[in-house]
Length: 209
Image 1 (cartoon, rainbow, N blue to C red):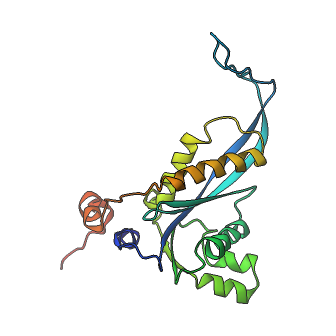
Image 2 (cartoon, rainbow, N blue to C red):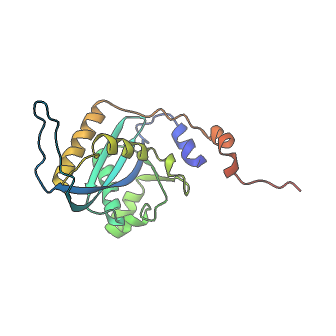
Image 3 (cartoon, rainbow, N blue to C red):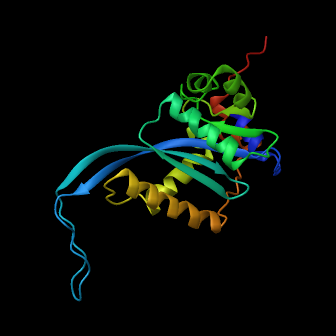
């Protein structure tokens, strides 16, 4: 926990951006009957019956000090999918960074080993060296600021019926463009010193002889 908090306390460094990553799901739901639009004196109407169209995954990369985020919509969230997402982050979003300081939870797919499942050893090794890995503790994924952005997108963009992957990608892209243009950052206030007081019960007790 303190490792992540100390990472958040560091000043902004464009050469070593702190990027939080996480993923969330979205159930694809289609209408059985065409919804009725708003009319004078009548609100929009949507039939309670719907069709399940499967699940989609959203990988979130969020740089809280710069107010930048990138969301990748995928059909799955396997180790290979995660590795390919990291490659996009490295090659397309931070190609000039000396090192990408990565914060993620300790899900078994979130490791350098995932890169070796997706790429040849030389490429996997090179890509793994682009990242400095920091993990939130077990049951401490709330420390990952990417979770905050996933919560925002769930409320602002995903709280309605979306029938297919193409529509989901279009809506998610529009959301992230708008939010990036607004440069929405996070002013993280919870520090290691705070944790030692407020979460004291999580620390081991030292028995003095």
